[in-house]
Amino acid sequence: MRVLTAAAMRRADHRAIHELGVPSLVLMENAALGVIEALADRFADATRVVVFCGPGNNGGDGLAVARQLVVRGYQPTVWLVHGNKRLSADAAHQLGVCRALGIEVGEVADEAEVGAALATAADADLVVDALFGTGLERPLTGLFATLVDGLCSLGRPLLAVDVPSGLDASTHRSPGPHVRADLTVALAALKVAHVLPPASLACGHVAVADLGIPAAYFEIEDGSLHLLVAEEIGSLLPPRPPAAHKGTFGHVLLLAGSPGKSGAAVLAARAAVRAGAGLVTVGVPLPLLPVVEVGSIESMTLPLPADEMGHLRSAAVEPLLALAARCTALGVGPGLGTEGDTPEAVRRLAFESQLPLVLDADGLNAFVGRPEELRQRQGATVLTPHPGELARLLGSTAAEVGEDRLAAAREAARVTGAVVALKGQLTLVAAPDGEVAINPTGNPGLASGGSGDVLTGTIAALLGQGLSAWDAACLGVYVHGLAADLLAQERGPEAIPATELAAALPAALAALRESGGAGPATAPPALP
Image (cartoon, rainbow, N blue to C red; front, side, top):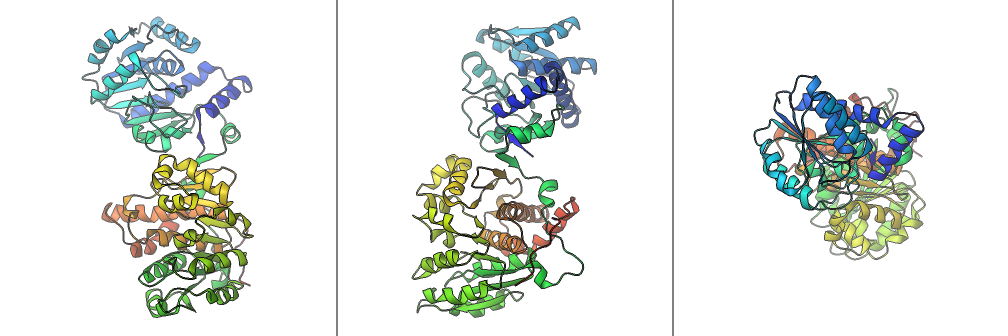
């Protein structure tokens, strides 16, 4: 589902009007009908509705909504808040239609009149915000700031038409005073403010109203940002043919674990098995071998040379490369540590193997200060950092990454040439060309040690089954979050143990298949 900027939405509107010949007033009528449908669904018992309309086309939408309410038997209170600004042509037309129907429209020209207008909404069942839509790019001041603050203080249910007034549709930031809606009806398509916090927190529940603009216009106008949805992501699931054998579904080689962190290796292995890999081998420092073998009995192990402290020696690279020649994907980093020869071993393995690779945790830390070197890899690469790891990789701070996660993910993908899955609330998957997918699955239960190791194993398993880096990362984060959501439905939002998360992956994959995903036409690669 494409997520648009305000400029992209304007271009799509322009094409619909001037290329298709759809009059702007028809689009406005479709918008009003979409709002009415969402209103009736979400606020079925509302009878006392107050509509606040601005001077632009969003206000025109609001006036059309008010008219549709009247013809359905409502008696809404309607306010036109213009501040002595000239109305847009379409808003003026809608005002004329309302008056021709005998609908009384009160006017608010200055701050002195705000109090009286707000008083009419004090006992409303629903307040409709149609003050400003996607055209707003600056903080509200004066009359409109006062009104927005007043609307928020009413404590009444709020429905925002397109975008809560005061938000810039094109950014995740909250620029100033803004409406905090219970329901936002996005017109034609989602905008950036609808999906990325903190702006999205002001949108409440979001419904999308179809205006009759062809979806292809959105694909063309803004292909750089979209929201993952089950129907789309489910189509990426690898097929499971009846005659398949374990070699059909790839062989994943994991390099993970260090003294005190053997659990990370076990979790990544369990996840890779449960995400569909036919074979999984975990390369671990020799002293960890018994723990990992007992912890993940479905996977195999590769004992690796270790120093007296139990950390990898550089000599571990040769047996890893020898086995990698018979594998289909690599996963490197969970619990690996950065002591001794470990960073050098990680870099050598990354560059000397052309297998698809997912780098996490200390696999990423091996490239701190040298992220651009990853562009030299011959194989597909997926990075799975949390904000702190991404900050170290980019020479930034976690606070700076958190300030603009979208920009940070795009920059990391550009610098490294890799697909980057920036973990967190609404995990972002960024490609080197600027394409970004927003993952809506997951919950606070994922804030638990080991959940990242499960993600590494999941993505490695999908890479090993033949998915591209982009598809494996998108499908991996979606299924990982969906597994957490299924568990949260059963046991609440408390921290989810990573062992339970890995165990829930098959159920998440099954649920996604049931949503309609049929899998790609081409079969996964057979083992060498």
